[in-house]
Length: 302
Image (cartoon, rainbow, N blue to C red):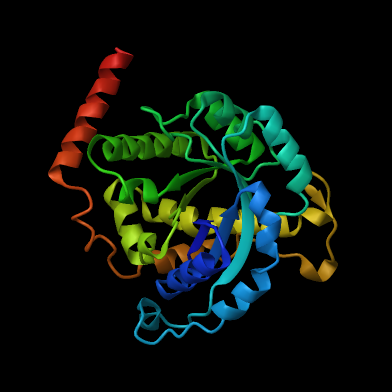
């Protein structure tokens, strides 16, 4: 199984180079650097240099030398829209949709969450729970995300860099969004949201965490590979789209993207045990906070 991380925080050449090289060493196969609209075109100028440097990564004495048939990671660049209203989001989409293979929008505000879920030209609603006491999702938004094929993004850095009640709120939001995903089947992607080399963790550690909070092997596989690959592949073909759902293809290029999914998932199920090695991330105090929050939610519903 390959691991896709569609959300690394792009900043400048030196930081981006260190970040992608570290992530590649720790087992990630596809990396996407996200930039603000103002910095996106500047970043494109040094994309080729980054790819050239990434191809020189030495895997000796790193996590990846334990894997077989590993390769250097693929690299892409996308746009992350921050602190924008609905009109600004629409203008940015019109300007950059044909220039970028990946566009996400930071959520948190319910109006923004809804505007993004209703816009099929946006790939991802990132962190709908941002600065909220709830998950930022409901059944209406879940249906819209499914109808418009907008993926919902959960970021591991929200767990890594926070503590106590805020971390417990985030974990509770992850669980609630997972319940909506299981019912309404909208795309759900998992990312690290790494900003520096100190945020990077191995794929084994990340998988261990999501398994510890209730994600199944299939949901982890979908979140780190199947749904991200769908987004990447769809946007690569966007230029050939006549209308939504109709594209120009060559007879020799017809393939079923679902063909290898079952065999890949079986291979992931049979891989090494990911449950160990992450017990210290969530302590007893965190679990007490989570239980307190979930009990409070149940009382509010009554």
